[in-house]
Image (cartoon, rainbow, N blue to C red; front, side, top):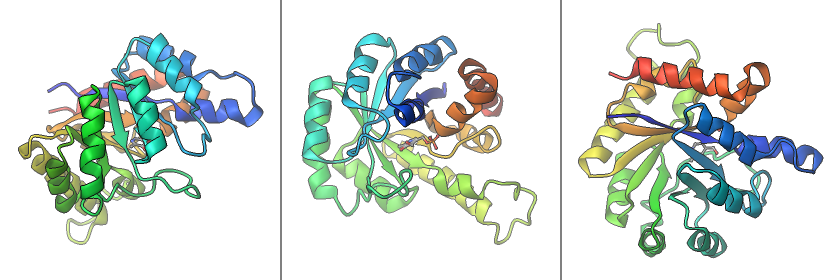
Length: 250
Ligand code: PXP
């Protein structure tokens, strides 16, 4: 199955907001990403609007001819925005104001009761919902009971470990354990009929083993590519990531 690449453009907005004004424009980055071969655009409308703002979401929906994946927290205000904007997809993430980035997955098992009607409203409105969860069986079981169409497996834990320890012995290698956890979770989610996505902390060095998991059909990648764009340009960074994903795919 083809592996889609969603480009998260949040940090183009971070750079813009550092000085106020309009430059660099996340919509322009999304258009460039499309030309470079991106399959979708991902943007996280945080409650504190630290990067992406409401107007960016409207413009991304109206001016970019690619599926928009809106990441958001499970709040009434965000629900109202998503129902109005009708993005192609919504990814529900946990959100803490003090965190630098999304630190852990959504506890779907704990919030199952409230998530079910929330997800239903979004999906009835035409948005495919994915739950950003840690790769644990109880979270995948809960996502299925909730009725979400997809899960996005949090690769942050794996990515933090994926710094050159592939050569270590098989036993007690936390990186191999994290990788196996993702493999098992992807298989289980697919068996449950969920579409499987993955993302967070992915870069050129660690994307291969994730792209090689056959059940995963979408990766969402942002911070590394926006950083790399400073050196080689956004298009070249995206094209290289695309190449590495294709090479790793079985
Ligand atoms: N997927 C989700 C659900 C996220 O919250 C993020 C970060 O906003 C990403 C993917 C992309 O992560 P990164 O910016 O580390 O590539």
